[in-house]
Image 1 (cartoon, rainbow, N blue to C red):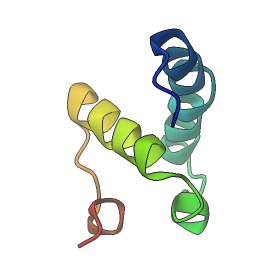
Image 2: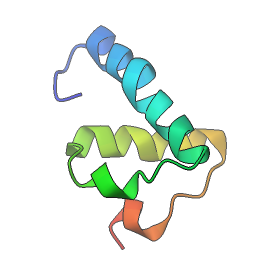
Image 3: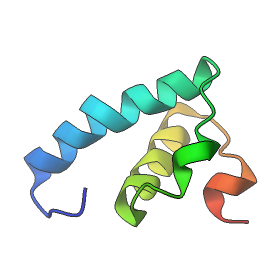
Image 4: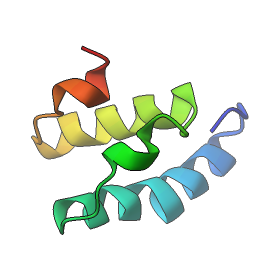
Length: 63
């Protein structure tokens, strides 16, 4: 996600981060690895949650 290339960001977002969030919906404990994701990846996940109408928990928002 750190690259500025739109195609690369889209591939990582839809090929890895989106399935990761869907796994979280099915019970995967995303909190365990959230801190390992880069800033851009976490931001992308938060934006996806907002787009889908999913309330992001406080630990995702850094609160």
